[in-house]
Length: 457
Ligand code: ARG
Image (tube, rainbow, N blue to C red; front, top):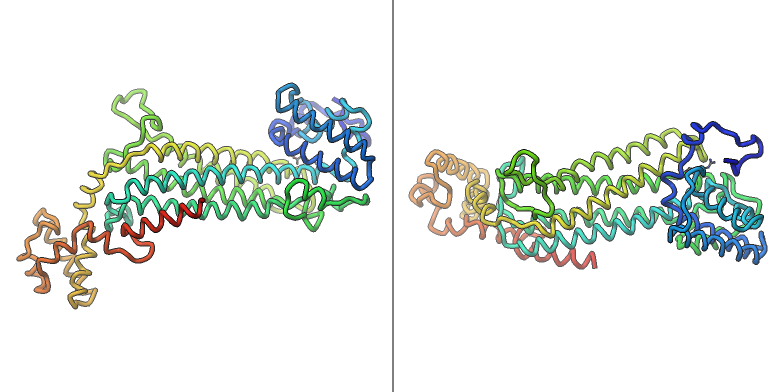
């Protein structure tokens, strides 16, 4: 096919070189951004008298038709074209003749592609933000549903202190809130227009970059043309925010996998979000959670790929930068899929509150509260800690638990012990007493739920 850039050379290239060079396979998904960007550009050219207002109108109408035809399927993407920018311009020129050739005045593919990617990612940011909000809502609803269920909280994956399941779930809501914050921060820096930077140095035409930026919903324009065409920070930032988000989802996944194991049996995933084994009839596998955990590596990989591509690149545009798209598109696609499946998985997950309670009763997770009991009776914490530890050892030796140990045995260790100790080490009391802000008491969990709901609106 004849190249639009034929001139200095006759544009004849080897097929293998064309295939290697071409990006239309993956940048065709930006056709909407490319066309609306071009419509704003044509409008600016007309408004500034760089082309006639009539030509501008013709270009805009022609672009609108192309958009409509691509949307409806009447026009198919021609994979022989080098990229989406060339494709649109080629169709426009085929339909409008010479007027079509005026569109590319005072711009370059370098600022055009930067514009398209920014517009595309801004939309992706919004789509991902909506999904994160939906997940936060699902997690918060679950926390509310199980706000009274007690389970062991763990450190080192060893039973540590009793907590409410709602409290545990709200920890994830807090992480996801930070993810929302990062996405909005990233969107703010993405929403700056590079169009008008042209190839690298700006243009001799009397353009109005702010006119175009405003028409396309940007908050500002890139203030240095070299930076405008070579900046891909916003792609890296988005993938970095997405990597963190995936890290959160993978930690959540890991817990769901553990909790749904026969060893824990704390939760039961809906059949709709699990799979069976082809050989072991008893199996119900948490594949969705495992895949999310697995895909986290893929998103980290996308981030590392682009960071590595950009490392040491001289200014301004280099073809290496075409590699930005596959990474960032893959990261967005992956994250959206993971979030969608996660929302359903969480919304349909059921907690086995009896098993949680049993686990909470058997792990001496009220030993801290036993020590605190003695502290409140006047003993220094370190001495109280030691006695509580000795009592745990005694229980283990006697095959019993703190709640069942007779008062007489307690008294062997300290005469500060009284009947009221049993109330103090009751698991519900242990949880309820943790009223410090952000603690696991029911009031605190309710406050967290309310805070998060207000945040997500
Ligand atoms: N397909 C290219 C990309 O994705 C568009 C920019 C091409 N610019 C150039 N000077 N060859 O980066």
